[in-house]
Length: 469
Image (cartoon, rainbow, N blue to C red; front, side):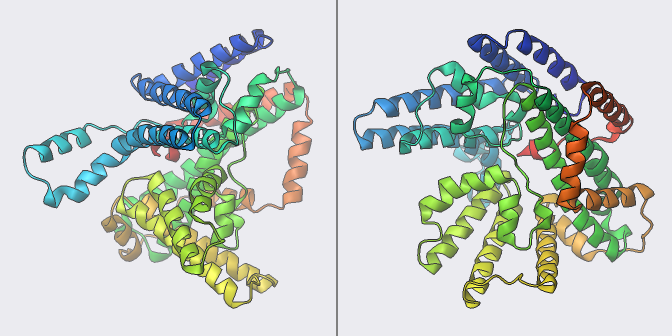
């Protein structure tokens, strides 16, 4: 039940109607949202619910046990139980096949080797498991650290884990920001309604009109048949994929944030115009921010962060970014993607220290140069994301032909990408303010027009890229 399908539209309309009928009853609205979330998640594969229920029950009780523990050693033992349970499931479903493939040269043909192969081949990666695993782990770690009190009941915690607008692909939400919102009595607010509809409409257009058009008419043709296209088209497709994945994922995040707003919840922003970054470190402060901040708080800082010796800081950066890479996918390409990001961030830090702590991008020319380098690095390292193998990546980099006539739809998608992402902030803010001030009826008509346009392009629409993570 993806966001850009009519089934989700019907589902959302029914749940919204029921929610606002019982909005004044705290437990009733929580039960409704939890049931809706389980229906939503179960629509992918019913057995996925067993996994999310397991994580929910495990971490709810682990938090209760930690609060009741009288010694630090017991608290740590309970935390390790939570880590083992959640990361164990994640490791089996997401990384077992890759592990077996890496060990294949030394695995015996029968016995234990055959059993491992069978177990790995039967593992199907559940949708969203990486997202809700990190979400529940942040909860138990915060309770262990003493910065968060456990949820008051299992119902609240279960809703935190499975809240359907952000369940499948984020944003990754912290319990400290979500659980207090359950105590607030939602009110039907015109401004919130308008903002929610606007974010949903924006997300749908990002996904279907820009991301999928870039994929259909530029990125996929080059990657599927690299030898048929001229070198400059390969370069254009490489940059095009960086914008495709941005508009695809930020579009999902917009829909998630807008949908949550309709129910009275505020979710964190996930993107801050990352393609305008002038350094790799800045890029990761703008791209998928809820993941970046998660690994910063739960991996990078515990390792020592930037306060350690320089060799240790380099180690911390590389380990953190490799984890980000492997979080996305189980492959050597993803490992290398994270490694490249970590090395680039370490080199940036080294270069900055050579300049006495001064930033490089201090003049218009240097800012432009930094921007071009950052966008180029981001785009070319994303080949590891788009490529299915080393061979396919090598083909995009080396196999060129003579084809150079792109469809008009490719150029329109490129133009839309640039105009949408690089428009002046003041213009965008002013346009958004005027649009949100329109009467509710006009807002509804505009949403209807958006849906009408999308009907014509849905036949070529792809699943959201981040559903596979």
